[in-house]
Image (cartoon, rainbow, N blue to C red; front, side, top):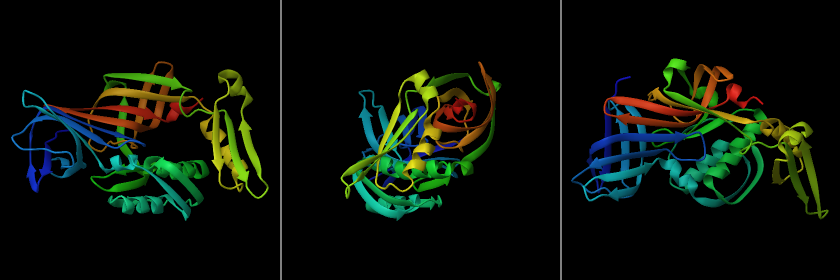
Length: 321
């Protein structure tokens, strides 16, 4: 895919187009991290933290809109710049207590409080009855709401920044018609782990203040406990309603080896960002993947006339225990 990148930034009311000297890197993640754009440049103009940055392709394909957070100036006159999209502000900590909100309502409230811009926010079809998030990052507060949808409906929703607009989509609506085969990549690396979100013991605890008692809702899998040892998920719940069923759903969701594959040196495609899926048909050692995989992380690299990307993928046979 040919490209004609245009990088501009706004300083003190004026727009500038710097001379990028060694290419650009744009990285996005499926959840929990903002999009980040980094580049080295020469410029005769000032660039300051807080300056708005825009990256487009052919002036029409809108890739990145964010703000400068870090500049590093060298003796040779080169400036290294790091900019983040507005998801960066979800690293702020706060307390949110609410009742009967869906994820879109929560995101709109947070966006209003923190002067962020919203785009299209999908209706997840799930309402959180009660929530008390104290001293948590905004990423985690929103993540709790989206995790509740995943547990209750087995549907994954992706929050991403669409050129300056917070956007919430069902992961199925972010499938990109790209076929990845063995000849598409320079290299790949497969990882299998129980060191992340793998749990074979679930313990949900409800504190009944009227009876001054704690009720525990446990679930466990003795087979995987014998293989891996006890890996426990612990959560205090605000209501006993549905707690037992939630414990069962959590065990089903998390009682598995987490597998991922990193594929490097793929031909770049502007449509790909964290949370998008593409179709992979590849034999990787003992694993044969033939289906959709979701991108946990996407790194675009533009150097000269070359646009490549590295993908960290999950799903498909990689999530089968």
